[in-house]
Length: 232
Image 1: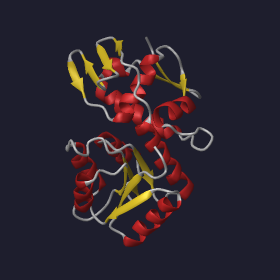
Image 2: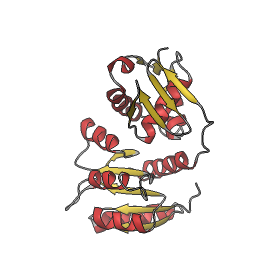
Image 3: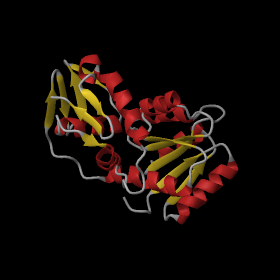
Image 4: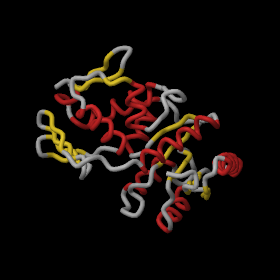
């Protein structure tokens, strides 16, 4: 995805909107802005942006509601969203945002270099070539890479994009301990030299394990000082 990608900035604070818009325009992106979730949804439905950067806490419907509404509409279901908040920043609140379908969740104030890196990484992930058609299996679980579906004992499991890509990486290399750096680069598209926060991976592992059931969750093992492994 080129730097000319269109980004929609959503924040009820005019000063915040200007700061983020200026920062992203300086990085070479095309930028639009909206002061509310309702306005953002209308704009995204009319002309889907390449990425939405949204505050969480806004009057009349915040970032979580915006993500839910975007994901429920076929016109906007695959638009990537990065949430930000200076208030709702604990682990449970970030996990809720990821479970709703956000692609990342940042605590304000966000350092400019980190924001640029996060935006670029999410855009890279969405513009990456499609994986080879194949099905990956574990006990009672089938992951269809081409269709991007997961079933556990015949029951469809709804995963976010990152949860799906994380599970794919673990299943492709069952029995191997995958490092945090490898997962950040493979699943998120981050450059490990500039971003290495293990919490990003841990939060997605936690939500993934909740969705696939206890038996399969027990096979995703944390390897201290390294990363994670899916036991065959």
